[in-house]
Length: 94
Image (cartoon, rainbow, N blue to C red; front, top):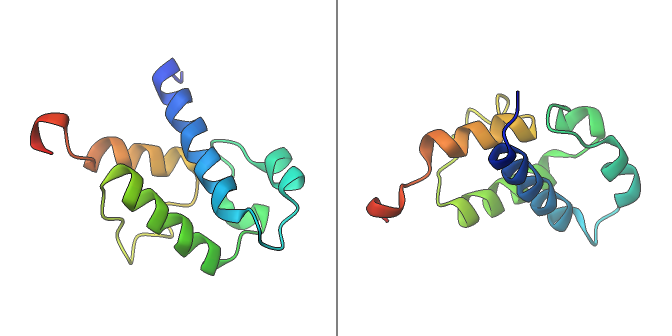
């Protein structure tokens, strides 16, 4: 079961993805309709260049270093949220 905090963070990550895709060739309404916490980004049709840009945005916002070779495992909103929860600095260590 997903908690309210997890749902909020999932939504923040989704919003960041949509912001990253804005201005590109994507039909954002279609992406919004397809996007869910556990939907694989590739199934939605997001290309690798846009995913790289999205990962840079995630790293900047959440102060994490996403693994270069691990991006295949970070293929859903949920996977990214869990990675952030496990690797983001705690407020005391910032």
